[in-house]
Length: 367
Image (cartoon, rainbow, N blue to C red; front, side):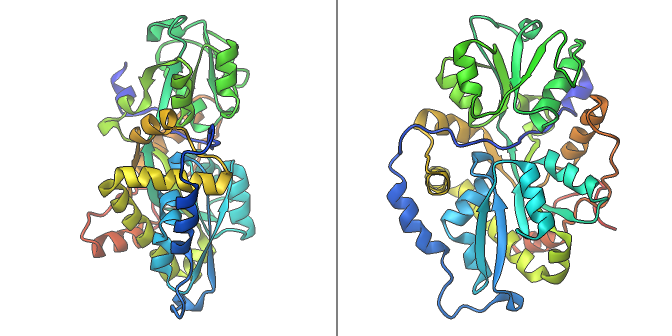
């Protein structure tokens, strides 16, 4: 790998639909823990606000939102201001909801955050915190592909043209010295854009030879006999790269800073609880998946997937900037001006109060 590859590659993660076969025994827990998310009688509203509308995907990469909702940790910080949740299965639809005011705060992947910021000319959203790192793998059919060089000439799936895994794979291909037309996916490798929910079936049918995908799709492919040939985390410094951010509508941040701080406080406390209670947190996340989507992940999928995702308060801003550069290099994005995409002041205030170190915006913060 070229040395610069250890600094740069692309980020990860457009929506994953919860793969699931049967209940895992978490239904009753989901029902029980819903009580934790209710507004306490007589609790005081923050800034007099009745509710805050929060969006996230029913995916493991949004573990902070899943667990924080399930365990009532956001509601605890919000007091009498009710946390109202909405689930999304695609980044663009969540950005549209934010633009329309249907949500105020959201958990989302880096690519839609970049697109939402640039399309509004920097006027609508800010990234106010990190949430997750990792959880992206190249999984292949071990009978057809035994080494990284064997990927040449094969059919490899990514979730969508221009999404963060697609950009990551195109960048990796370029650094291998192979040629692929980004738009068509044709070249030394056939890049087959396939929705995550049907990628396992495409793999089983033999129509693809592997996939560069996020969790839990990667672990589902392994459960079907696939082999992890490359973990994207191994290509990054400290094995960290952004897969999920927290965003807020700029007008909401201006009008309700204390509510935003309360949600961020809930996120920080949720991440700390996940770190201290990994098995309970995994069960809570799966319970929330079942409650939100009607489907829980089977153990052979959630166990390895959970281990590969790290929750984090740090937005890992330099990796988001790298992903944008790689999309530009692939011809999928015009060079964006990302200065001002971050406002980490509220998060750093929360972290200081918790006795934790501040996080950095890599020079892309508000002035």
